Image (cartoon, rainbow, N blue to C red; front, side, top):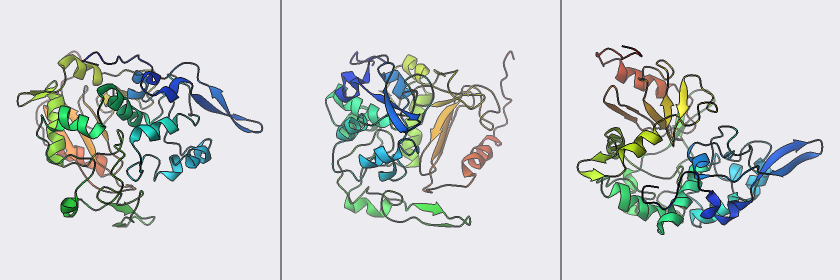
Length: 321
């Protein structure tokens, strides 16, 4: 966007022609039918998860997604690291199945960011791994952030664990619902939504760049106004949790107490394997916790931030103070 290669309101079909005529699933007396989308899906819709696109595990569409190698056929729905094809091929195929809501009418978390990965490839003219390396991880010196690891890095990859039905924790199985294909695999599908491997150190540097308005240690990644746009609630009437909002890729805190002890103006998100992070500009804080627990039924995602925040002794700024 900053280079003028796209705008937030541009239709996704400009970069992925298969999205020129999308459909939405609707229940009928005889089953499910696919209705035409009321309008084209935009890049803004994808960034705010308001395109109506889920991960395809919803009962109304699950069988159709599974037939295309998506949804139930892709781990928990979001997994593409085992696919022997570029991410744009996967996303073009996604456009052939119906989505679960009309564009712009509701918040639906799903393949949106994976589609954006393909948009970034098409707009930049380079694969997503090379784009991220040249524009982000290289300038910020994030040497441990990659989509896939070489064989000699295998020992550094943390094992994935999972919660059992009785609350115990055990090593997860191999495959899409467990250890993944991050060392041995096709190494072709660069997922924009659930693909990178990293360390807490690297990711904290990335978030510190965001906290400082788009630059760190002399490397300017984004303009301050772009950062402000990304971290401002863009869908106040569509994001359901009370006191929270959603910007362009970040959940935002609109009311103190809506997200534990986080200040108003904080923003962050979490990862499928249990990772959680938050940037709190008022507290001058970047918080990163990385674990490998899938599925994760613990409360560590709430407990860890509380343990950090309780150590801060400065008064919380309140509206009007």
